[in-house]
Amino acid sequence: MLYVHGLGHFHPENEIDNAFLESLDIGTNEAWITSRVGIKNRRTVLPLDYIKRTKNQDLRAAQEARLYTNAETGRRAALMAIERAGLQPKDIGMVIAGGCSPDNCIPAESSSIAKALGIEVPAIDFSSACSTFGAQLHFVERLGATMPDWVLCVVPENTTRITDFSDRSSAILFGDATAAAVVSTKNPSKVKAVFSSFGGAPSGADEVVIPRVGHFYQNGAAVQKFAIKKMSELLRQIQERVPAERQNRVIYVGHQANLTMLEAVVRRCEIPEARHYFNIVEYGNQAAAGAPVVLSQRWADFKPGDIVACVVVGSGLSWSSLQLEWA
Picture 1 (spheres, rainbow, N blue to C red):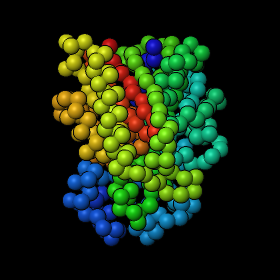
Picture 2: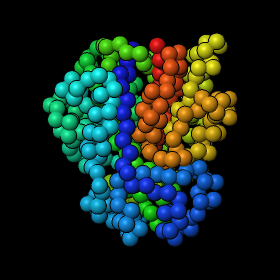
Picture 3: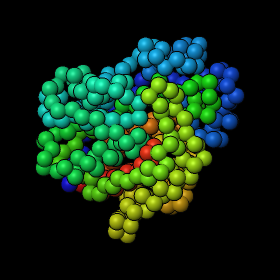
Picture 4: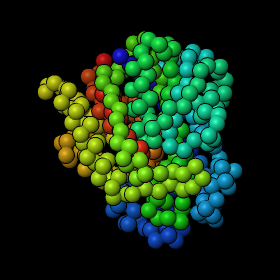
């Protein structure tokens, strides 16, 4: 069994709204953007004048211009999660980090976050693109009693650093965010992961790519089709595990890729609007941080008896799911 003791999140303050994207003169406007992805606002670690001046054509310049490192956004999200868990950074026994766009090949992102927190613990990166958060918790649970008492999982996703703002198809998508969770396989809490899964289809590995020195790109149509089908399948698996008398307590939190995709899954799986939690409209596609950030933002809203089906997909192609229950 895996217990979740605290969730945390961080968004940088700079905001990219649709009017700003329209001002870049890349063929976008409010109606065009909302009809395709349903996003109105996003956050970025980059200065807005830098984006407007350069459209982020030189990724080395983006690293120099950014206002926050991944380690710093990771530290801020982690501190919220640790505080909610009623702990101190010194209580953490291991840091696991990962996501889609690490700052460096080495050191491990987890090591940089641990250093920022001022703790000396084992640190390792565990990444599976946008499926990272679910994959991390899945494997921590599988390792069980071999893990330290308290494990910190962090997902820093500052993907505007690798976004080509001259390409309207990708410029409209991403918003920066970082999520963190304090989990334990030994210490019970009110929130437990009673089921988790992780899977992959490597034949689709080239459908979504962030090169080591290049901008994000994807086969959008193919990825959308895959995401809707797989997320619907994962959500139904959890629905089938829940007794009939508790179906009205199932809350859906999906991968925050775009609103169209999320709503397609809701229709297929007959989830009422009130039990679909999302933040894509105001924060954009936050990559692997999206779903756990939604959980963190709604942390105080969950009530005893709630069942959260957190289902995500990512490059690889990969997918993961979590069934979280509030005791």
